[in-house]
Image 1 (cartoon, rainbow, N blue to C red):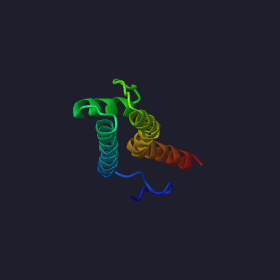
Image 2 (image 1 turned 90 degrees about the vertical axis):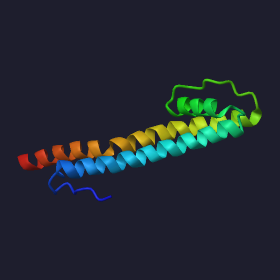
Image 3 (image 1 turned 30 degrees about the vertical axis):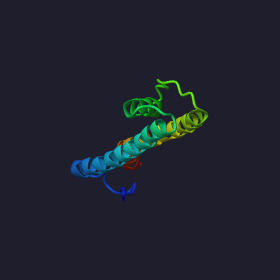
Image 4 (image 1 turned 60 degrees about the vertical axis):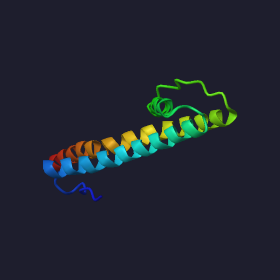
Length: 117
């Protein structure tokens, strides 16, 4: 994805909205992938039902914390690793989602600064 250079004009709104849609689709793909890993792992390793596995992975991914007690050693190891992954994934997915907005905002500020000089 090519973004405009700081010397170029700010992209028109339809281009910005299309870019925002692409970044949102990519962020949603990452969320579905992450939830899939968590749900499958909690179901197979943690021995939770599919619904409880989805619920647990959703809560861990968003930083809310665990909701079910995991008793097996493998389940505890998976839960620990998934929690570490989720902390990084949540911040990364948020960065991907907000990147076009931040880029546009900084691009507008840069153009205003360049015009003043």
